Length: 257
Picture 1 (cartoon, rainbow, N blue to C red):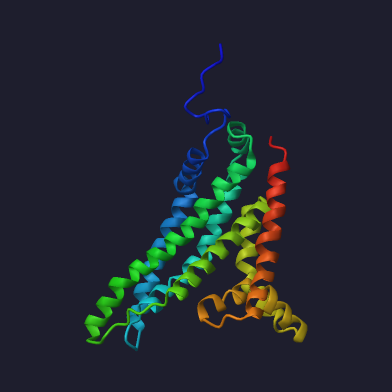
Picture 2 (tube, rainbow, N blue to C red):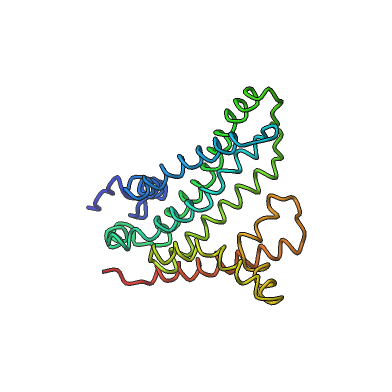
């Protein structure tokens, strides 16, 4: 007699359905102590930055100006959260259990990365939502007309930037499988490229093409050109695609003990 499939198995395959795997990895993203602290800190800082920007404005409040102030916190903490997402299995030595339950590691990695990228989108929407009452209250208190006009392409560009920063954290985490090292690389990038840009014409050119923080600026600035697209593609290739691909191969082939 053929044994019946357990509820955890996908009919005809004996593997865990991807939807269930995705839910499990999403739960892991938020139910560990470090991730709860990180997401809580991100929400608090985003609210504080929006409120702080509203308090010091000397001009009529603009919705996107207030929402964009949260980018300081999001740009730092989203990559850190992404790094922790893909390195936790190795630092906590739970990879053996995870890959024993689902031997197809590519599916596990996909289930880990998608929630992190989705969190970047949700965080941006949260900042926009927080900026709505801040804009209204600031305008009422000062007796001025608020600006609610937000260009859709600007918002989309901003969200894309946050998603790319998160993807960089995922790529570095997968490549190094070491949270502190990956976080340092992600955090030190801006300072490093600022230093390189001061090393003459060659350094300035390298920074213009490889600094992900600089090449993503046109996404929100509205100064999109073919050269800007080429620079963005180059930096994404250097900091996301190549390290992410190498990290993927490393995890898929790495011995688990």
